[in-house]
Image 1 (cartoon, helix red, strand yellow):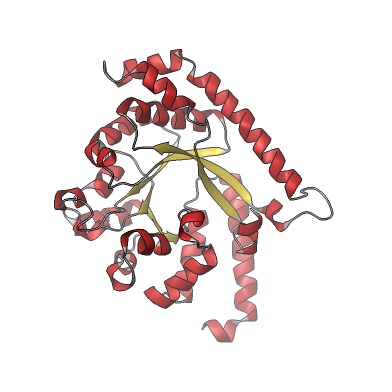
Image 2 (cartoon, helix red, strand yellow):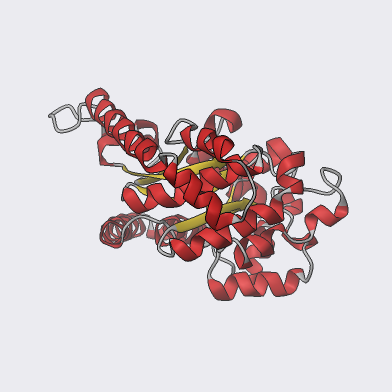
Length: 316
């Protein structure tokens, strides 16, 4: 959070395997088959909620350690103490079906138990053999569990693919299925959107439903080799799909939010109104609880008004 504060970031959603893999282990014990309701029953009966209570205790310890390291509550408190942090349970989708199901269930359960956990996401390369072969199964799992936990937020990495990385048919439906079957409120990456079936209809639907796309310019360049006018950034803007910038894994991309905004200007031609819109979108579409979101937006709007008043001649 100290690093985030230095980048003028006020809110973070961090993706973590918060239970240390305990749910995946329970999934292996439960096995796959007999239907999703029976699998859920077996995993819960095996002690999933106990493991999630331990995960909450670990999170308590981690947050106490953060407050100590940053001297929060003292006269020498680091600016990072003022950064609001929430968590997304990350599901390792490259594992066996029973392990993925158990992790998705853990994400729904933990987000229901602990207000600091605001949703879940699927991680690991989308183009790996298991995520490609089991994509529809993963969406079916989410669809089943979402009916049981309707208040849990969902953001899904989808469309982090390019031609040649997977067969052509692999580019045709991941974003749409993530929204229509996986109930994604936000899409991470979304790079292959123009290759999807009825891309025009998909983009119009994303705009009308206000499905935010998390744009990771450095990551998409480093991993997929997609940059400049090959990136769908301008396409999303043209259709009115809400977008915000993200770093993806900063340790992998060697990036930060300042660098992502710089790339948006230099490579995508983003002007000041677009930059301001994306910065505000990152709070508007955050999964943080409403009262805290209202506070964060109020602080953002005040800071922007102060900036524009000071630099009016330079930004108009």
